[in-house]
Image 1 (cartoon, one colour):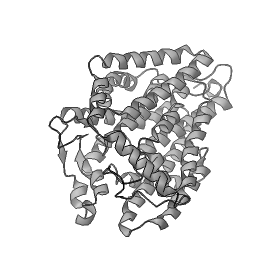
Image 2: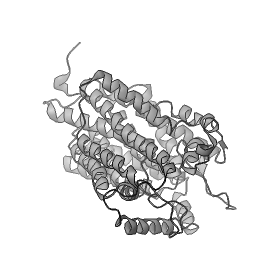
Image 3: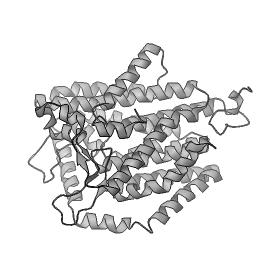
Image 4: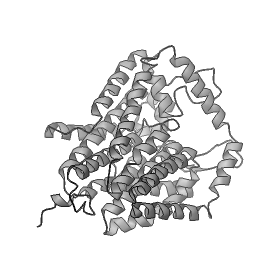
Length: 416
């Protein structure tokens, strides 16, 4: 599911196949039985119930396809979270559970560089060719199955190429990068030796090129907020190792800006586009229309003639999508899960646990700007539920010796 991202992308299955892989995980959990549930599961189940009921508000039958896919992403995220949480609570060497995310990271960096080196590359995928004509022509579905490496304006004489693969949109790439980076750093702290650790460390500077070229302002904002929270916690606890890791990461990023004029590129893009105006017009329309259906919303985003943006009302940010599509209570549940996760993981004591604890913070900063009704949500649940389990293990059996480099309490280590 996470380790073959380039393959799923090339086949056109990265989006449509994701809930199917989630169904396989669900079957494994049902066969096993008695699975411990991560904190906040009840809140997320209530959110899913509201989403399901909000389908009654859909204006036309054709909206059921995107609605079902979004619901599939929400369900898959919970299944992934439960699977990882159960495994992290019961297994000894916890670092091994993060290997799929490390594989996902390598796929992200590889395809990001593909977008840098071949920004105009696109092709029809096998899944796109196999879909019925009516379904393949749906703009929502086509974006998910048609392969392209970057986003750019085809009408511009001097287009700005922004890496997007394996996602349909470059904002999703920036969102995924910001969420996954702390997990990569945490893995290098849990696994103190080995080829994978050194490969991850070597990949960090190379990953900055496609990440910076996305020009995603919310990516930088969310990472900055996460590092700020991490720095404050490190200073309060006097954790020199955390402080040193932050300084090292910032130094690498600052060095990269000497070769990539990211500030100038962002300024040029803002000056030559109406993205801010479009976003604000969509946000205003959401706030206006949600007053007419505050409890269940409208089931999904809808097109409207009252805004200048091409995107439907209820897009340009997960906050606005949930509020418009499913109502106020659903939004409270969606945000509440991430707030609960941020509070509970914030109690982590190990350096790796503290790095993982900033992931829900990063997600909360991104939610108003980036959509998460895609595989990114499962990526977030994977890492956050791992962090929840790791924090519980640390607090349950801290012992005088703390934890091992692999995140296992020393009191729990049994000599061979």
